[in-house]
Amino acid sequence: MTMFLERVDAAYTLLIRGMSALACVYLGLMMAVIVTYTSARSLSIPYSPYSFTFIEYGFVYVLMLGAPWMVRQRAHVFIELVTASVGPRTRAVLSRGVAAVSALVCLVLAWHCGLLAWEDYSRTRYDELRGQLDIPRWIVTVALPAGFGLMAVEFLRFVVSAEPMHGSRRQLHD
Image 1 (tube, rainbow, N blue to C red):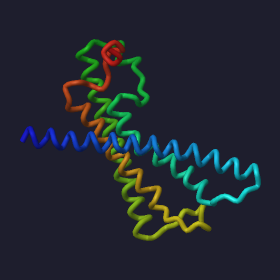
Image 2: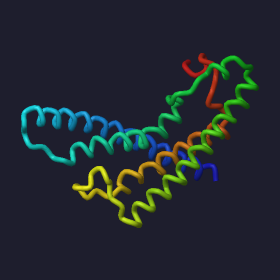
Image 3: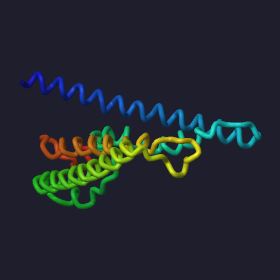
Image 4: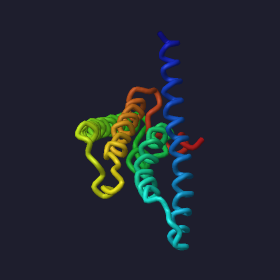
């Protein structure tokens, strides 16, 4: 059983690392498209109307693809003012509580975003801002439940693991 769980954890880690790498690639492509789009407009050269949509949707994809890995690495924004001012035992309890609340919020968001993505898919809704391009809206909303769901998993890992999410500055950076 332990070997099975280790393999599941390794596959899951590979998944969120791959998602993070994909977010990095997408961010680089967004930069290239921004330069191309801006240059084409400045030089009055025709450009694809999809380029702006690629950039706009990219913000959601980069965020949702990279966020689970950021949570695992404790690279997300959190304030250590309270957790750094209490003792180790209180810090561990407080940290697990914060992680549990964060996981719950992410699960609620994943659920509601999942319903939205399903509704967009099943009713074939289109992006109103890009109506002339006929882009189904689910293409962007499907990233939301996946990202929030995996962030919830990462926060839950901090709830049940031996190592809490918050630690003293020395513990986190050594």
